[in-house]
Image (tube, rainbow, N blue to C red; front, top):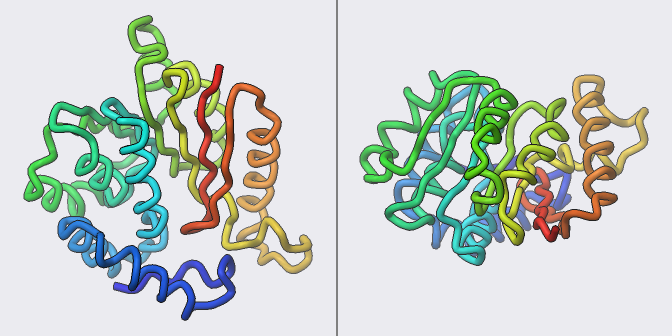
Amino acid sequence: MEYNNNKELLQSDDLYQYIVETSVYPREPEPLKELRAATASHPLATLATAPDAGQLMAMLLTLVDAKKTIEIGVFTGYSLLLTALTIPEDGKIVAIDINRETYDQIGLPIIKKAGVEHKIDFIESEAVPVLDKLLEHSENEGSFDFAYVDADKVNNWNYHERLLKLLKVGGLVVFDNTLVRGSVALPDELVPERRKQRRQLAIEHNKTLAADPRIQISHASVGDGIMICRRII
């Protein structure tokens, strides 16, 4: 059940294990432990939200009193379950993914057992059309408290523009995989070929977010890096 995708960020497996074993795992709710264990055997397990990033997200959700949220990219549903466990009983999550098969097979049974399925509106679709449809209804503008993006990186800016309209002032959007295993800080010649495109997309997106006057940002080196953006205007 170890998550060891952080060596490039912390430069120490031992330090990462210390963090999760002393601060994260002891506070991780049992349904999340179960889902993390169920996801570990999947060939693409490293796509799941890292537990230390999840712990920070749970705190952010609580700090903004999130009740109405959006999640783009679900995979097995670790971050989705985390959100559902954190928001109030009458909270709602619009969850969007182009394929719900992995979620149905691995995450949904655990989510049902946890008693939070009623908070989730899963939409199997590309995200941009769903966000555009939400924006067709004026009552949705400025009505969401929180958004989490862990999907295709090519569309990150398209998601950002739409989510800023959907979020209320003071609401948060969190982007995952913003440090790409530390490769954003490496010279191009040292980056594996398979990672170069994602690295370049992350560099460009991070730079654009840093220059956006509509948001306050904090770049946190948890998981594979998350950019926390707070809408200020």
